View 1 (cartoon, one colour):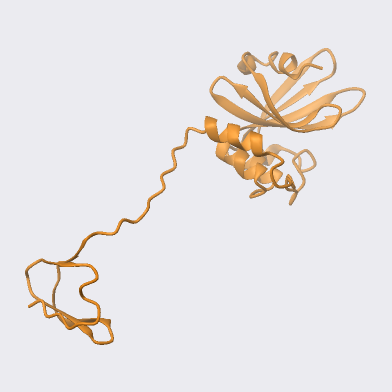
View 2 (view 1 turned 90 degrees about the vertical axis):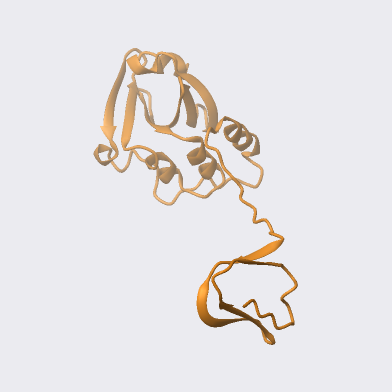
Length: 191
């Protein structure tokens, strides 16, 4: 059975490509497909001698990574990104499909509540690395930088106690710059 050939009979899936098989038995059970710029998560929800059924959803690489790192359940990964799902049925000859909302899908067709991938450490390492490469979301790591000066811009009639014997009087309009580390263990009057 060639999944791509079956799915390509659906008008909007003319360019679909089977991407990554995440779980398989005699056939792919949980897998991703790429369709143009979109990534889809599919689950084979029924296989018998008469037909095979899949349910699919558009997803994101972040969602897939969370799934493979056991941060979210399979059901959550399937329901997270969009409310629109596709149900595909193939009887060996004909392909039928329906677009449905999550609320219209019978509970027994959806992944079991509370089930995780239960991946062992490193089991999906290659897939995670590949999904991270493809991910177009930009993450920034912000690291604090230490300034050489402490800048105070306050007009106040109060005393700030930095350490037990250290005081700073903020009763001034001017901006003062004091090198960090020079205030410790000494009284400093900035007025």
